[in-house]
Amino acid sequence: MTAPIPAIEGKTTVNVSRDRAFELFTGHFGAWWPRQYHIGSAEVADVVLEPQEGGRWFERGADGSECDWGRVLSWEPPERVVFTWQIGGDWQFDPDPSHASEIEVRFHADGPEQTTVEVEHRHFERLVGGEGVYGAIEHGGGGWVALLAAYSQMVEGQQ
Image (cartoon, rainbow, N blue to C red):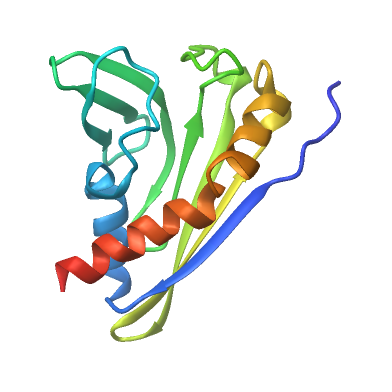
């Protein structure tokens, strides 16, 4: 068995209801996900998280091509969503679900118009080349802290 690799965590607070925070996170991935973070050969047109268990998480290229990233494991609006990251150390999609890390996102209502969003990206040891993926996410571009900053900025622009 491969030694566990620590989870990567991130947290942000946004000034919208929990329902709206969930909807903006899951339904507008492409509005906040940095365009340079993709694995397809085409320029990214959108990033999609399908809104149901078993749904796909994928990028859609400007040329109409699609490139899978993972699957939705749990869909519990507006509390929580869990989806897989099936991109190995070669930065290609790995269709084997036993090689998937998991991303859990929780939405905590701090008030009627304030929500804390917490992300835990875990089980990197399941990925082929998981240590490299962990290092690239944690140290390459700010990881989930930077991604959540982009999400928070998008949410502010929606108000």
